[in-house]
Image (tube, rainbow, N blue to C red; front, side, top):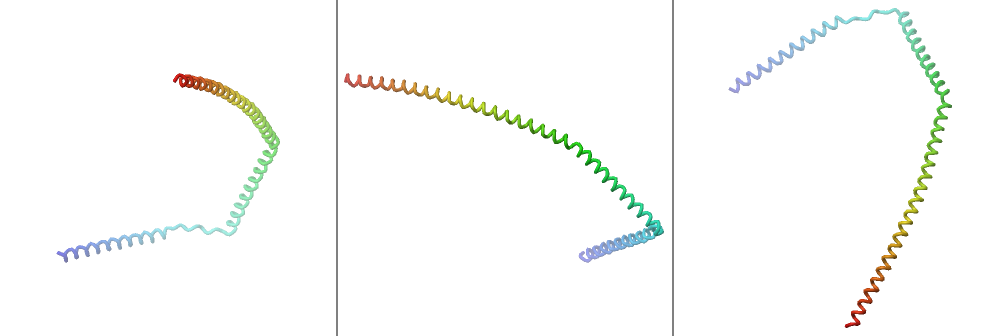
Amino acid sequence: MRARNRQRELEDALEAAHQRAEAAEEALRRARKSAGRRIRPKARNLMHEVEDNTRKIGQSAESTINSLGAALTGFRAVAGQAGSIISDFEGAAKLIRSLFAQGKEAAGEAAGRAREAAQNVAEGAKEKAQDLAGSASERAKDAAEEIDRRIHRL
C-alpha cells in the first residue's frame, strides 16, 4: 500500500513538472514572436533632429517670456491698487480703535455703577446688621432683666 502511494505521488510530481515545462516553452515561443514584431523607429536625418530641437527650445523660451510678461502686468496692476488698499486698511483700523475706545468707556461706566451698587448693598447690610445687633442686645437686656426678676423672687 505504501509503495502504491509513493508511485502515485511520483507520477503526480512528474505530471506537474511536465506541465510547468510546457508552459515555459510556450512563454518562450511567445517572447520570440513578439521580439520579431517590434517596430523600429525610422532613422532621422541629423538636420531634422536639430531643427526639431531648435523649434522646441524657441517655443519654450517664447512661452517663458510670455509668462513673465503676464506676471509683471499683474504685479503692476496690484501695485497700482496698493494705495487704495492701504487706505481701506487704515479706515478699518480707525473704526476698530474707536469701537475699543467706546468699549473701554462703557466698561468703566459699568464698573463705576457696579462699585456704587456694591457700596449701597454693603451699607444696607451694615445698617441691617446694626439694627439686628441693637435688637438682639435689647432682647438680651430684656432677658437678663427677666432672669434677674426671677432670681430676685426666689
